[in-house]
Length: 557
Image (cartoon, rainbow, N blue to C red; front, side, top):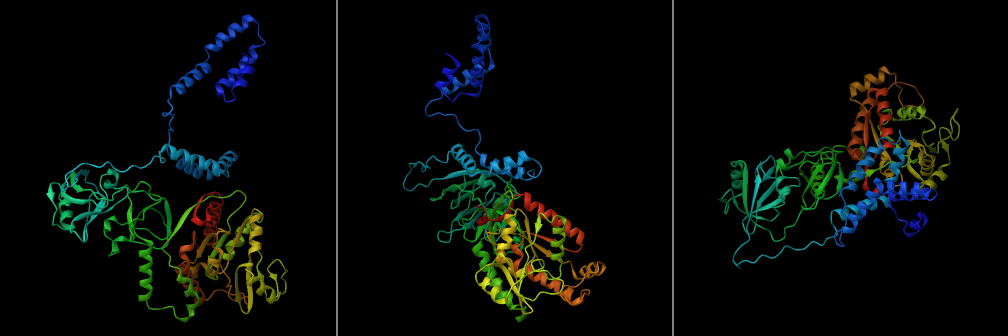
């Protein structure tokens, strides 16, 4: 059989066989003696032997016993590889090509389908086999766990034991398992379930005892702890949620009087990314910090519980801001608790707008100007619109785009401005089209609007990265601005230094911005020293350009 005939019979040859076919083509032009020597060498080749071995193994595999996948976590590995590649994309063309290839939806779907097959998620979940037993006899299971530094709590006290919580059933008065902490000893064993009734602990009958009594028994136990349990009727394996959220408030379980178990609580700060592993309880979710993937989960207040707390605090708190802050109070209607997030990967040639928010006079415009001067071709700001008259020395389209009041009112009504406001009787604003044109040109759009524009800017269309420019404390603020001979921005007709009253207002305004909008910011810069603040801004912008960052999950498509 010639090489051409062999290739025509099957186009799905192994690469090793393709190499042999190429060799056979060469052999057709050889003499008889040379052909015999060639075939002998061919029969002894590693390629042919490898091909025969693979064929033998495949032939032996039965119809219902196909070759199984080696890995079941290729999707997770892909995400980790993407994160590593994102840090090298700006340095290496191959990394950039691999980075974009791994983001292809067809390739990602293939990997997730592979994992589903490897994990046998397609198998039906059959119910437990019934156990024959007398009508009056209860099924009992005995579970042994090693005592560890994990919480098991009762109604009024807690003791680090096995990673579960217990309570007294209100109807029966029995001690039951109330909650299993994800990642704890009880969870890892897979033998204890929510609703199981506790009969004995280390041979001591707990009938008629309180959760506190059971905790005392556990506290005095050493080494292995043996539970005798009556299985719950509706038990099931805990499924770990994949939800990630950004916390919009600080939480300390040590000072929370309502948490079932302080030792089981998870402390966090505003801005932390939390992995919500269980939302089964209406009031207490289980979560772990995203940076601590192997840690045991802890209890945090659910969204519903935290919203009720915030509403209660607002009704109890005296209104201290007065009428002067009434215009900002509508922003407090949003109850900030948790926001679901996902990793937003940078897109080639399309940069997220960077928005600098801060109190008037804090220096956000100076930081923006310095960044543009660093690379005018890459960093740009849209020219704002205004209805005020042009001043001497100004050029239309350079400092402002000057339009009539009627024209700007009509455009605002038509939704053509992403932010606008009125100052001393004149309108000012930034058009959506000007921002879009900068982004489409492959440039980084820099904005420094009034802080009340945050909610209008923070949309899925723009996907902005918000940075809060904050002033230092009053004394340092006054010292640094005086030494730098900074000029006040509050009096356009008179170049002068800042007054103490203006410094005070700047600090108070920054606190107010943080109170109303702090949960929206992706990062912050303390502008005490302009050089240091600018260096941090450059680092932030580079991260936005090159790294996958957490963003609202609705932005990730």
